[in-house]
Length: 130
Image: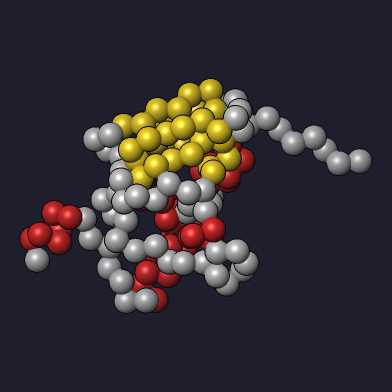
């Protein structure tokens, strides 16, 4: 018999525009702060993830991205609109919970992929200073 999946819906969703951080607290008591950059880079959209393994598109230049709008999708997800125009992909509660649990691993993987491509992350102020 399969075990019923635990309900992991957020009990609180809060976005801080200044820090560009989305905070979700879940029914299982876990809470994570997701930067807009992290969420943009790990968008569940086909535009980012592709339609099959190996079709993923490395997202670059997203250091200063912000979330403009958060819309509920039923009772299972949110749709995020970013200020770079990206607004596809539905962030299910399961996907967001997985991102939270594996945030460090995923972030390091992203940084490794950028490094392998010879791409450096820079904020707008860092770009302007050079």
